[in-house]
Image (cartoon, rainbow, N blue to C red; front, side):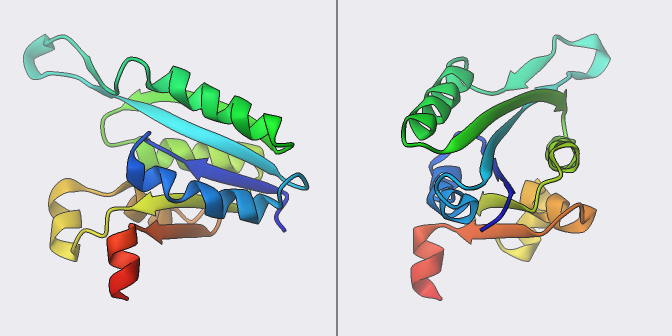
Length: 146
């Protein structure tokens, strides 16, 4: 269906719910699915030690998912990057631009507009950057309520 699909994941269950949609859009063997994960570096004030907002085994789990997708005949690739806090959306947009992606598929927590203002949203950043279309998949609870 699409030549290149980006599935942006943070390893959460919400992101995992978007994977089947990304696979469908990639066409089960016809397109390329790029699994994109951006590890966020949070730097403390006053020269504190940097902290990664990521669990230690997440990269390994995502690589295993990519390997499983490949075993199903899907042309899947893993793109892992690190960025400073607050730049996850722009880093995913860079990955999409470099790959000449047709669409970015993301899971969304379904936060309210006020919640997005307070905590930020990678999906919201991607929508504003406009490098390619973004398909935001709501969580099951939100989708059932629609």
